[in-house]
Length: 454
Image 1 (spheres, rainbow, N blue to C red):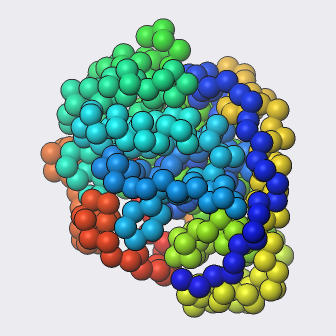
Image 2: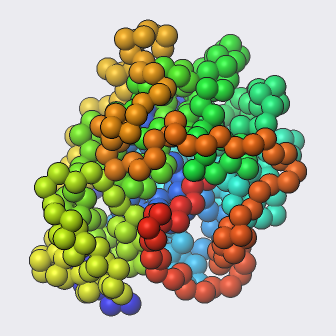
């Protein structure tokens, strides 16, 4: 694949962060980047950290895939790649290690432990995916399939906690069960495995992103977990659209922290008080330069760049269309020379990210102290759930449909998951199917791009 050559050396050696290991407290009062297949690539995680994300999750990677990969370190950039037959299945960089949580897909305690040990030198935590409803995740009993097998789910978490050194945290990400009582029973069992935090995606297994998350159910769960007295952090996932939305979400849910998926896929700077706008100018060129420097494969960089959208303050519609046209027709980094003005300074992009991360006074978590430190029931700190489209645009520039305007689903049993025709046709990734077919370059339609968020 043709692309611009990377500079021979990194801008300067990355300093190792002198920090203590993660604890439950580090999962509180933060705003995190959710695990997202394809969208949660290394450049996206780095931009999220640069713009304020407390922690970042890797995309889900199946245990067997990691066990059959080869770990390779780029001596020039420091990028660590876990390579499969056709190329890297996961890439990371030492600068993100103190903030990086590896989400594992597993249905076997022994394999989960082996995979975690394989990755532990490059991450600070292991998260078990118990919530993704997509076929590639529920294959062989993984992902949301674990919700109906709590004995297996908890045995995996217990095995991970017993096998991992204390500096590696173990966490879980689940979805709501149909019954609140059943959800509380499952949460209690998970907490008793010794996890540092639990993330709850406030949708049931059969709900989809277009349907409003059931965030009102979380407050009771948070109070229940606090009553267990173990100090476990509860992280909310679902319909939080960035740092400027956490006051509203805190007031409704009482959650300790918040995880962002869809909004971050559209704009990875949403973790900042002042997210970037006019992304065709302020983010996309920088993202492409960084992707080239890091050696991120072009289809991945293109997919993410085409997913970005934000409010428009200065660029004309014609200018935005020109950028999108160049992207949609580009087949390699070389084809976007016109977009970048012929200037390839990916090393400078990386240095800016390194400097921003190293400048943090508090290396992870607690970024919301000055925003949500007051009691959650204080009406002065809690916006109402209902907001009109104009108010939503101020909170989250570029969000087309406010969460509260989305339709709630009908009740469906877990035994009969709904699979729209287009989801039945989602190909199984090579790490599961064994077929190493190249990933096609996606083309976003008028309704947006495909998203796969566990």
